[in-house]
Length: 593
Image (cartoon, rainbow, N blue to C red):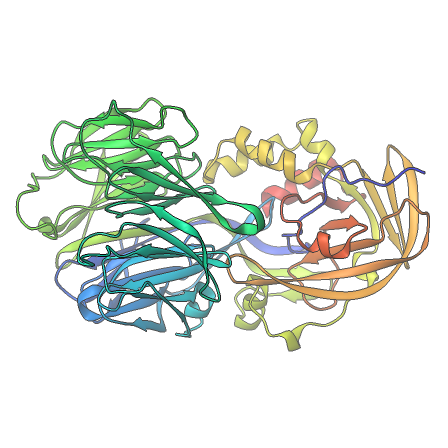
């Protein structure tokens, strides 16, 4: 008997779509700037230069932004505290579009206190602040910090030292202090499970200092090369040492940053060079010499091919990471000598949309460089000595009111907005009937294959981080399915593959609440086969942003014979729109949302 196959099963990430009022694309970028000497963080609109807020904190801060962009953390080493700031910009990725929610930036109220926080590392929505003088990290979840909670768990490294802890799924990667003198740099990484049990042997990494993530790879810098961490069996970290090439001059990396869009690492190497590192290549290290001593560097999260390096002669350099060479240079400030104390005020770099933003601390300015022309494109005055900087923002669809069937969903309303983002109480969940998805539905996969959706991909590329072709490749995986049509009537679901129907009856089998890597949650509504053809799947599972009864306008569906296995599917999302919509209407819907 023919067995129904999705081609690839689905991950449901999208909200059900009815009609939407007052939807428009909105671009918002905010700069968070700390002062070199004062306990203050300024929030500046990167689009028009206006100061949006000033937050008084407890000490001068290094700033870190979360991957979601919803949080910025002010790590105040001398004041012994980490402060959480809500950026006020949040995106909801619905596969074929992203919605943007914009609110005022605010202090979240969550602070993590301890003796001298220095290394601050995030991974999959969990953050670890390592307190050097205590030798332990306090690990917390981003969504709790944004809600104002300060709950955390502690991970003890064994001795006070200049160390680091990285939360890694159900494990922790913990720096090992130098056995003779903990004031020296760590000697490697140990892996522990959540019960504090050691897993495997010490991964040796002498003079460990510097950590970064790129794609699914995590790296630590050592005197001998890099430790590269990737997911292993059961989610346990697999650690490999990659030695420096003998062709490199004497030196080492002590600071790393990870590429976005392209998987690579960029590290310092000696005073006047950087090194590009691709662990997948046989020759993993490429040295790039600079005209003078390096001050700072940053990758471009939007234009994945480029990174930027500021040197002490006041020049900003564009680094082509594919070619492995400096492609453009721009004289931008007066010289900032690297002589003197390591912590003296010197420029820092961030990327905000179409601009590279460089702090000019001694001039009290932010300098804007057009990313396309690589020419200066303005400046913003900031009081004091603007030093560390991070940028948060992008382009998304803003909804004044988002309706699902007869029930309006206003993202401006705090209650509904929190549910929409995946933050809700269990008591708010209510069972849903199959009638919420009743109708005649068509797969959008054929429209992707024949080029109908090309305008959607081009539209996304205009404000996104990838090219239209890269987006198309992404959705090729996500939308792929052999089931071109689904009809739902009463308790009967009929799947059409190559025009041939396969029908079965389904009854509710409850729902499951899933917690995603970011810390937010979703509800999977599950139906089990009660009668029908043998080849029809035993289970079907719907997921959208709704957690209570309401009609869906489009959806994603998981199906198969293993209920638990379906709950683990996080890779693909076959998408269905009403069959009454024409190709052009679907394109319009996707671009509008």
